[in-house]
Image (tube, rainbow, N blue to C red; front, side, top):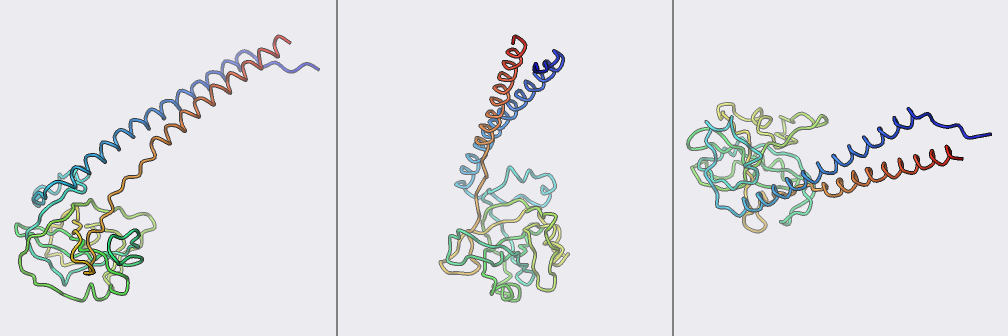
Length: 251
C-alpha cells in the first residue's frame, strides 16, 4: 500500500507557516537583544547616578510631571521636619542585609514635611518584627528642621493579592505614597509620588538604613538565544519534512 501524498497546497501552506514561525522567532530574538542593550544602558546610568552628589528634591509644583523612572536611585537632599507621630510601618522580609538585622520585619516610613511645602515619605530603614509597635509609638527625635539626603524611589505597585492596610496597627504592605497618605494626617498634603530611602546610620542603630536593593533582572540574552534556537528548529523541521515529501513523491 503506497504512502498517501500531501497535496501541493498543503505543502506550500505548511512551508509558509513554518517560515513565518521562524521569522517571528528571529524578530523576537532581535527584540530581546535590543532590550538587552536598553537594560545595560539603564544599569550604567543608575551606577553613575548612585555616585553623584545629591540634588535638591523636586518641589511640589513639579511632582505631577516627574519622570520617576529617570529619577530612580537619584541621590536627593531634603530640608524640612519629620513627623514622627505619623510613622507607618511597611512589612517586608529582608534578605542579604548589609546590617546585622534581617529576616521578617518592617520598613519604618515617616512623613517629612518640606520647608517649602509638601510632604515626602522617608524610609528610615528596617526594624525586626518585634520592634514594629515601638516604631509607630515612639515619637523619637525633635520635630525641628533638618537637612537629610537619600535615594529617590518610585512607588511600589500593589498586586492583586496585596492586602489592605492594617490601620489599627499602622501597617502597610507596599511603599506606595498614595496608600501611605491614607494613614496619616491629611493636613500634610500634598504628598510626593515618590519616597526616599535613607543611607546607613551608625552600626547597630535601628531603624537600619542603607538597605536599598539596586537590582535589575536581566535575562534578555538567554531569551534571545531561546528564540533564535526556536527559529533554527523550525527551519530544520521544515527542511526534513520537505525532503521526506520529495522522497515519497519520487518513490
